Image 1 (cartoon, rainbow, N blue to C red):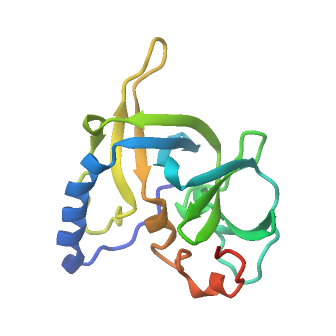
Image 2 (image 1 turned 45 degrees about the vertical axis):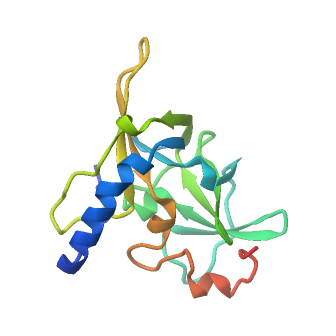
Length: 191
């Protein structure tokens, strides 16, 4: 199994990351859209979600990073499509009937992220959200807001939900997308 692409968090950044991490789990309570990438389940703040669409092959853009699948025209707005499996450095996904694109509205920019499947909307209370454990400085986990523990019901097992700060993820490691001048040149993703 492949792991998430990791980058080094400089020592000078560790206190800031630790302080953010300590403050976020309590503020991470709320509603999340849960989705699957492989066997793992993730959640993003429902307030960022504009809509969910079935996957259709986007138009490729020359010299774009591998995780940028291309762009689509969404009612007159050109939307970059990012495959989260590739952004996380996981194996290539096969696109099937469960594969969807979650359209995100991040302030003045709109993005689509490809996920294996959407699980649903989950309401989380602050006591369900735990801080991200300290990893070595070799792991950049700054895009995680916390990890939620969800008790199973009836025949369903307990599960863990990794809460993603999607804006931070899309602007992290490698060529960032949020606020990136390369996307501004398209002039159509800004509202």
